[in-house]
Length: 219
Picture 1 (tube, rainbow, N blue to C red):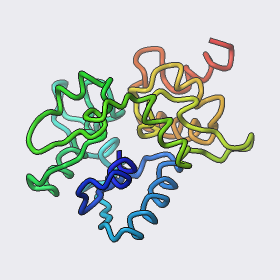
Picture 2: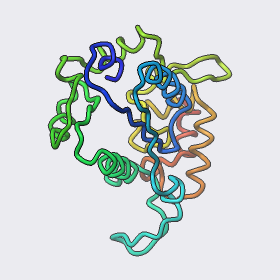
Picture 3: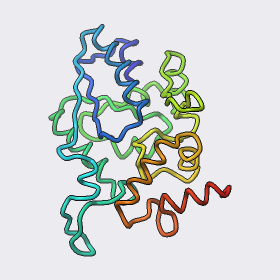
């Protein structure tokens, strides 16, 4: 979306990047690529961060939940997308009602209907660009979302349906299997998080360690 805005000359004063602290390295590389383009055009680049550290909220924040008092929200995803909630609140508070461009594609109809509020503008949907169109558009301009591994470079969109935080529990089993196979460093990080919470990442019988055994045995 941002490349489209700049190429077509849409009004653009500032670009905001929300840093969860749990992004793939490829995301930060893309951020740095984009910042160079913005600097050349004199467009303000702003980094926003959550008020509290991600892992503090995941494991240590005092929470009065439905099942009583406990510490931490545990995995972010499913019904408890606390990381997404934090992101939206921080960004909305920063924008203060200003017009916002949002990069939702034309074929993400449910998201489009949900987000059509306030001063949001959806350039990709206006141009009729699907998610596949957008990926080709970025690849054609040299943006690949690549992770360096022992096997060489891995393009995240070759192994993931959506490039969200590496610890997002909304990832499906195919995506998790690919992380286990192609990105073992991130799988080790997932194991480190699972050690700190009793809640299995994907539900009963599907902790990170149980999934590793399943994937190891071809399941």
